[in-house]
Length: 351
Image 1 (tube, rainbow, N blue to C red):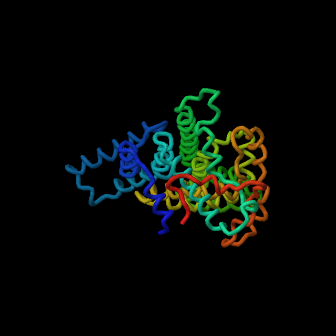
Image 2: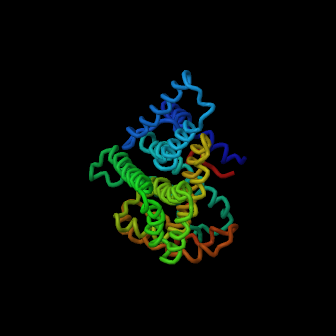
Image 3: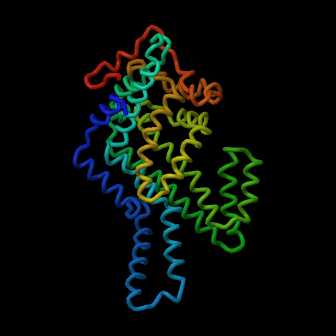
């Protein structure tokens, strides 16, 4: 580990309350729930406790229905309602740890970039991301007086709506005769706009013969991967304000890269306990991703048309053709600037 890396690690400060929240997050994330579906989860817990109490009077060793019941409830909570994923995402609105992690990682990416290219002409290097982005408010336009909990409320509504739709589709799949077509039809509707009618039709045809459980896991993995990317990019979008339409086109123009990035991390998030650590790594990695799929932001005073200019990914084709060892090749130039001076602060020196 280099001197710079050690200095950055030692410079991290975590308050006792923040540490306690993170500890509770790791220990209880897979077990507790708050939000729109707490009644259903309370019923699941009640049934489990009741079965545990009945175990003192009834011998369940000779039957299997209790195991199937508990297994079905666990599947409902973890795969349909996505409880652990919900809790990990909710932590963003309780403590600023993830936002700080994104910004610290962005600073490290900038420092590493300039250290890697310190022998080159600074005028040919890209501008910084961290130095400019930290000048923006993390809560967007302060003139609109948005309450800090507005974002959390919007998240709860968004997640509650998605959980409600998931429960409705899951319930409809048990209808006689037409139930077997509900999940394949939902798959076709979902993927028709994303990949086209032919692949969506293939998915629909395959879904008719696949077990319900596999289809649900498949659909939820797709939706959760997209939701994961939305949450991981929140530190960027909370500072660079896009309109709803601009944001929609921004995601659409980068959907392939974002989906591949999100689904990879989502798979590891499913690992009990270790998943919350992976979430932190995903947030830090998103900072690096931002430097590849967006341009360096200007100072807030010159940011009026910046969001509009970022809707289209300008160097998309060139970036996708780059080898892994040369991903910096298409970064924006900074004519007449020497961004390396932005890091001349105490305790932040290159080794």
